[in-house]
Image (cartoon, rainbow, N blue to C red; front, side, top):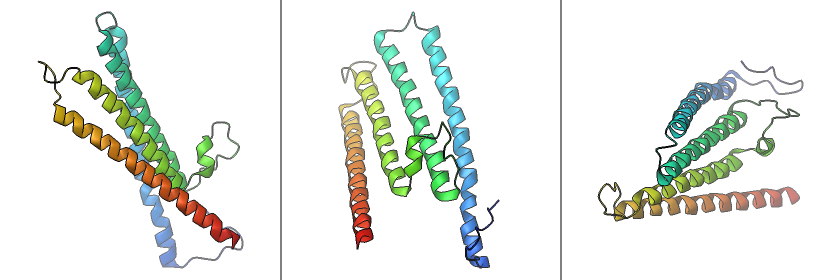
Length: 187
């Protein structure tokens, strides 16, 4: 499972070898996320079929909610790809995709900090879709059939804003750390 050590590389002791090899324990987790992505593909196809088969009976608002649901599934799937590919590349083993025509552009400079910022931005996008769906579904709060309360919508908005503030904090911290690392290389 492990690659042979490059020529001239120091030989690791048994404890160091065990600790370093423990990164492979994450492999089942990434494989599980691939299975979760398959479930999202099934959900997407089910919702798409619902949209296509019921297109003549759906109102504009219902159609918009289904399309927003499809966009939500795609964004979650994108998030899964970032975690699976970026996490595996960062924490387990290199994928050796250099020169591959389908290599994601972001993968060439991925590290834990970049991955955190990208994940935070994806979560904000997903939260935005959910908040938009809530606003559309809520319509007139308090009307019969509305499943939303003013307080519930307010809390969802506050949570969304907390995601935005957290992402800004992560990006700002990452920027400070990259500037500090660049400054230490100059000295």
